[in-house]
Amino acid sequence: MEVKVLKNKEEIGKFVSNIIEEKLKEKNLNNEYFKLGLATGSTPIPIYQELVKRYNENKIDFSKTITFNLDEYVGLEETNDQSYHYFMNDNLFNYINVKKENINIPLANLDNDDEIKKFALEYEEKIKKAGGIDIQILGIGENGHIGFNEPDNMLIINTGKVNLTEDTIKVNSRFFEKIDDVPKSAVTMGMKTILDADKIIIIATGEKKKEVVKFLLEKKGITTSVPASFLFLHKDCILVLDEDVKNACN
Ligand code: GLP
Image (cartoon, rainbow, N blue to C red; front, top):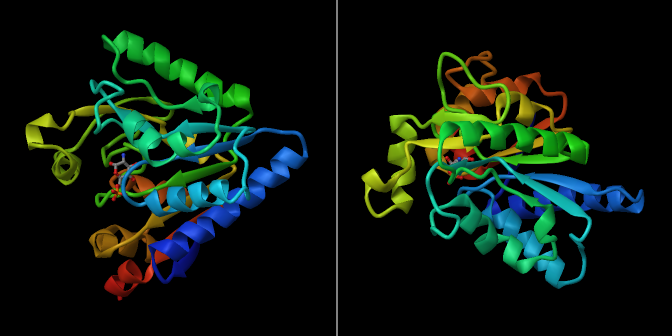
């Protein structure tokens, strides 16, 4: 795992956008679609702002890009402003020319677990059929989760339904009116789905992430109690930090 420390969120937005732009152009020049794995949360917002800016400046064209999002809460309507569908439209998709049919986000507002299982299998198939993910963007939970792969005795392999931990419900309740409104489960790409991406860029910004970042920087080991530690198994993973979190680790 390569570590890159940058001054602030804006610099991170530019750094990650450069990597995305370069790979997108390389793929499109070869007449191939570019496949981008996307994350929600506040961390990737500066990247999305930078990508929208570059699109408006005609520097980048998303017409041959396919996106796959990491996760979605179970039970929220797509129009709910806390759903990850809403988040993605509001922060990126409404402002760039990615085609609607090329946008993939786990659908979690389904009637029962069987339907969710069926959807999860189809999601995996779609990723495979597209030829896999070229670049996966990840944020990280304060408890070390990636996507919604929460610390547990066992982690899921492929896309599926998971229960959220009390910690995550508490942390994510800041976006909801009251803690009871936070869904208790989600559908997320599994650990293998994430690790199968050609390149992974995981970003952690701000002091709040210091415990988990410290754990990763100390290269303590791989454990299901810190799902992000499995990224040490990936051959092309960059951990991008801002100075705030890096300095808080010292
Ligand atoms: C959510 C998402 C994760 C994200 C995490 C961190 O729980 N499921 O994909 O990485 O939040 O969010 P933030 O970037 O706001 O700290």
